[in-house]
Amino acid sequence: MASVADFADLWNAQPGWLNTASYGLPPRPAWEALQAALGDWRVGATSWEPWDESTTRARESFARLVGADAADVFVGSTVSAAVAPIAAALPEGATVLVDDVEFTSNVFPWQVHADRGVEVVSASTDDLLAAIRPGIDLVAVSAVQSSTGTVLDLAEVVAASKKIGALLVVDASQAAGWLPLDASGVDALITHTYKWLMSPRGVTLGYLSPRLQELCRPLNAGWYAGSDVKNSYYGTRMELAPNARRFDQSPAWFSFVAAAPVLELIERIGVSAIHRHDVGLANEFRAGLGMPPSDSAIVSADIPGAEQAFETAGIRAAVRGGRLRASFHVYSTSADVQLALDALDGVARQLRSMD
Image (cartoon, rainbow, N blue to C red; front, side):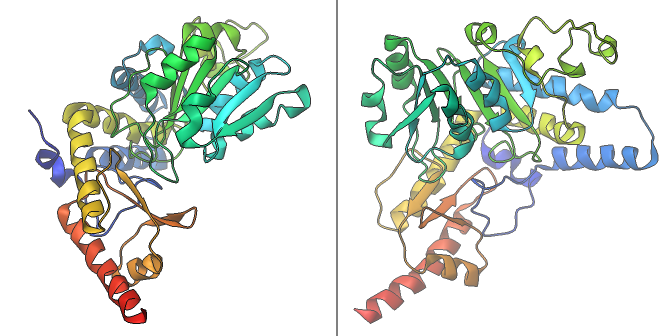
């Protein structure tokens, strides 16, 4: 059985990088593939088709990672653009339920339909499940919350949504790559890949259930959504792909060139192994802070002075909602945890001296 340690030499993370929830660091195969493509682009050494093969590879790899058929996976550039056709398909007066700390890429696309009577209501993370009740037409929620790191009980949300016949749209941007995911029972599972999937910005991958494919209009349709891409360049004859590919946006080639080898590498390592590694380090950090263990690779903590202490120590993390947010991934180590705890120990001593 592979372990994360077996692949550690594929990354060149500088000590103290605890901010994958903002962006992930590329492994060597992705970096080298991107540099090769950029070199070819610079001198015009190839056509675009070899770069585009990476789009197919990324689509197929993502499908395997979430237990879906590749025919039900679309490609795009941002989560909000991927959600937009679903929002446009909602009937007038529909009600959408979101978490009250939901990242706005999964909020604003619904809210812009307020003029059609679409209403967005929210519930706290703890109360979300209870809020899935008759009258809710669609549930839009993250598999892992960006600001807090809270992991959604996806099976429970799927069951509750099915019970009332509500559509379920899941943003997996803070989950895909470290949290095992299963698209079964979900209507849409969409992720950007520049965080835990460690790719350049510009790659979004999403699963659409056959039911949702029939409900939605492919508003972003262009040449790449054609049934036969190379015969969809010109003219007024439109024949779109019969599956989720008709929701494709024309891909950002170089971003996909790097994304494909990352996704395939994650498959080789195994998401379960990555999950154990990431959560283990997060819990090591939590223990050092006197916090109970959790099931998340993201640690959110209210520690006054932590941001300055981290900056002084050269540790790169984030502050979200006024709280320190540290995130741990494949290239994170126990040495990174200790570096962070040492920096925060100085803060603790300073606070004690003020008491």
